[in-house]
Image (cartoon, rainbow, N blue to C red; front, side):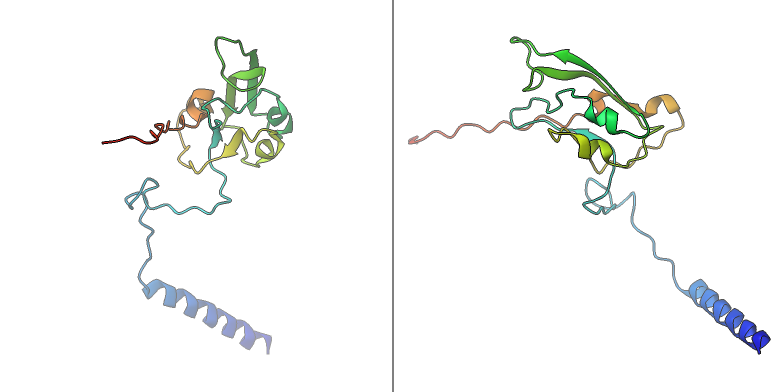
Length: 162
């Protein structure tokens, strides 16, 4: 009886294979789709390239506490701290990250750095095109990861007459 069951299972599997072979192929419209992501659709929980966030005043949120580097199991985050001065304010705290590098050759996108950050300075963005044939281009520096400056709103004039 087991030979009959084996033949029936083989015939069922071949039926599925033949049925899939004759159906048309469905292709997602990447990279030619519409929008900035050109056809790619992401879930909110997607962990892409890291983004260093800014506050509402345009200052960097990173205070160089080194908690993200300590939490990283792949040891791919390198930070050098510097002090803010009265003339030059980079962050709202006493210190800021003068150097902030992530080596994507080693990063495993685990999200521990995001969870460890007390100021929510580092987050995962939706950037996914990180492939490169040159390993030296896989080290992202602070300038590559910084979020753009927030747009300044023009003050509304109260009681303006035309």
